[in-house]
Image (cartoon, rainbow, N blue to C red):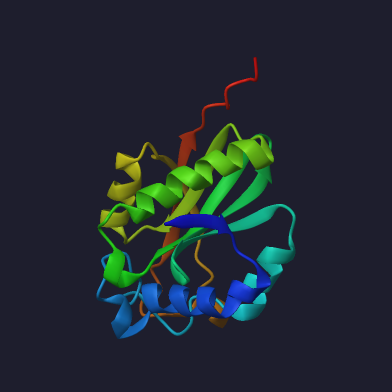
Length: 179
């Protein structure tokens, strides 16, 4: 497996992977999908291209040979904090440790690139098994909730109006200083 920053050439494969992993029947092959909560798209090519163009955001992409198998986005939030989002693993490869490897890579890159001392993420509050997964990796619920963009079709069409994000946070260790 090779992990590198995504480029514009990766966008079509990246977009297809995200949609397949989060929405529709194909997503149900894995366990991290949102297909029971949301219909429609998870993201679009324009939003992904904006991410790649922003110096305060990066997408790490995992490849098996030439095949994109996973990705994760990190963003600089400020005040020593970064954001981890869009963690995606091909549904046929989930539960094999790739997600944990991508999280670790994202955390390392957040420290090096952004000087992050902590990293946060949001998870739809109904996704209890996913929240537990992140808690096992050192993330803690903060008690903060943020609204879900219920009426913004760029984020999908909710099957319930009761969606909201919970915020999780993890402190990050500083990289060792050169001797």
